[in-house]
Image 1 (spheres, rainbow, N blue to C red):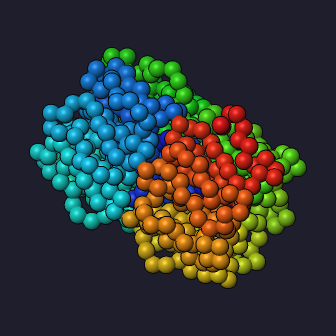
Image 2: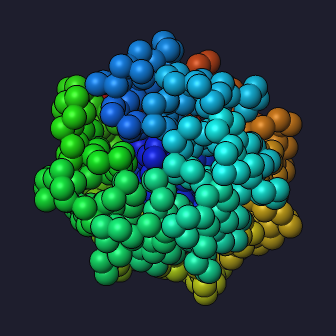
Image 3: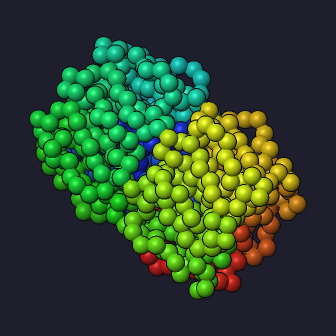
Length: 571
């Protein structure tokens, strides 16, 4: 069934973490991939990979425009970024690094310790500390460069799913969700608490993480109360020098710790998608793409330039396609009689999944809204707060904020009866469903007539359920598919990929250089991908849509109902 497409907005620059950032060694990586299921589209949703598009330095800030170019302000050391397109950026004290569409790193600013001289090769995530930078290879290996006085640039061996660097230390998450830190331990920074986390954020000497249930936990320096997390359920958290801010599940802000420079009481109202904290200031991107900053006003750092710092998202269904515009509103197109098109709800949404006959989306407050066909109750969503939703053939599955899966709709083959426990991602196909455990293990349930619900052994960063086949993205970046291969839909090409989407009888993926490759049934040209570089791809029944690095949505394949005629707002 239609697969996930996302628009990315998160931040790991001196600290950001999105709920659900879990196993991933390929972008959507950064704070990792847990989202991404057939038909899923997210804007700044933890469920997908969020690659950071907002970065704060010691006295400045940088952000990626909707077209992928970087804009920096106030800090004269980093104010002139290199030209070209980036898919993510992170900031250290006086240096900034970004990932190009081909996933190579480029850095600028202070380079006294070599922190702006990245090694060659491909990375899936970057994180910048005081005078060190670290990156995650496709294999999950951590590589660091720059200052190493306290061992902060000497990571331990083994695989990681995400990294976060602070002043004099660096931390990472293992595939199991366990935190490992190295470097200076003067304030207890490397005394990690036990248990699983969905992501990490660190700044100076304070490290924070979110548990799978959305609870925040911080350790290290607590001089101003910045490590004493208020009770609540959070979708994102960002650690500053002596303050911490978080986005609640309803997308409003909560800050605590030092308020000497307005880091706490100046936090604005409204709803936000992503947040990042610098030393004494914080910036966050609103759901409409606007940027707000507060705290210290040194060098006008809290006066960001005007512009939109987000992008659109798209999800391909059967005779329809749906997208999320930069202001969070939904727009669906295709057959004029299709209820997915005619009954689209109003309001602001963070993620979307077009299953074909019905579609579902997650509102900014975490509530799920479904519309379209409801023959089996597939559009009758239960009352819950969710981080991700995936619409299948005649059923729907979602992940609660606790990570527990919930499904509803047709259950003739057990596709709406999920296993117990916590999942990092869920993907609903035609008559089966697959999910990822926090350790990257794939688990499927429902119809298994062609072996589509019998996943192979391996550690995955993403899984996508189609009609009678399923594909997964391994931590190595290679694609492994299982189920029927009648039309070549499981004959994945060799190479490293960053995104994968299983449609009805075809599959598409994004290679490490940003180009798209498709395989399987080529009827209607659905496997003839356009040129260009892309962030995400969504394979539907007979057509496919993808999000280019410049924010433009492109669709191809069958168009008998106008499902590939992208509206002007998204094209």
